[in-house]
Amino acid sequence: MEDLELKSLLASYNQKLEQANVLNLQSWVLNVKCFEDLQKQKATSKLKSLIAFKLLAIALGILWVLFLGNLFYFSLHSSKIFFTVSVGAIFVINLAAIIVYVNHIIEINKINNSESIIKAQESIARLQLSTINITRILFLQAPFYCTFWWNTNMIVNDPLRFWLISVPVALIFTLASLWLYKNISLKNANKKWFKVLFNSPEWKSLIKANNFLQEIETFKENM
Amino acid sequence: MSKQELQAELMELINDNQKIIYKICNSYCSNKNDREDLAQEIIYQLLKSYRSYKQEYKFSTWMYRVALNVAISFYRKKKTADTVTYEPVLPDFKDDVHSTAELENNLAILARFINELNELDKALMILYLESKSYKEIAEILGISETNVATKISRIKETLKQKFLTLN
Image (cartoon, rainbow over the protein chains, first blue to last red):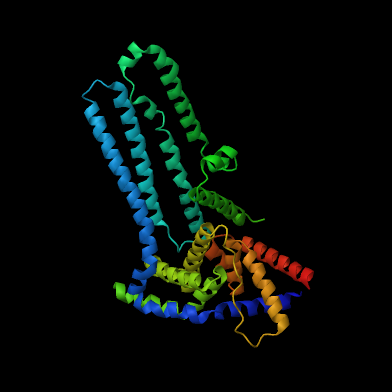
């Protein structure tokens, strides 16, 4: 196929792309005149449901943190040192996760579609990937669920059970959560343990975002 | 400028450039409902971003940026949601009675080829089809002019090869 022939074919294709299905779409463009109604019907309902879901997650998180804060505050006046430290740590970790989540929403609102395609799509993909940090942080609280019920009496009265069962279990959870914190990364997305642990559609969409980010990188390269 | 005046001004500009919306919706969506949803989403985002429109760019450049960004995000969301069932269908060109059988055939091959491109190459192709200058394509996409030229020449070469193999 000659250059000229290809050029003419591309021109015909372009013309057809502009004209095909125009009648259906034109009605939407004409509807722009009553944009406020249009906005109420579909576009905002999608956005609202997305934001509503995130806000609900934050609201539930705040309630949980308030409950933990309350427990922590009252335990300060008791002599339950393990309980206080454990609840305090869970409180701090959950608070950190909420802060990351709120920041996530702020960043979503900052996305500017009028930026260049590469810049805007890169920010969207990176933002999607940042949700992984929330999961990593939340895993850190696991060992503290093994220690909050500890007390000095059980160490004194039943040391064998404490040192042979409770401590090793807490240690295993600590090592596991630290390992997960370090290794939950999309670099490991192809590993078997990762696929077993994160087999939900949300995680699949993160992997897709990561692949897209790689596509963007390739696109940016002048090969 | 009041919100109403701003809206009215934008509506006029959208109407003058409505072909951009049709072209992008036809390129990124396979069915009527998706096309309508995408058209609506594009218009919504245009209105939302209009205050940030800088006169340093042509309106069509800005509109292409917003519309392509919305279309790529929409397409990716759709692809993720319908992981198993989603398969892009070629744009429906059947209404045109003036086309010859050979042209129809070539257009179908071209449509299939463009559909197989990834989201970013497809955006590049849409802009190239519009006969935009390399400078403007580079501004819309956010890559260098040299990069635009290299990519377009590579896509054209692949396309020629495809026609050679098929015909």
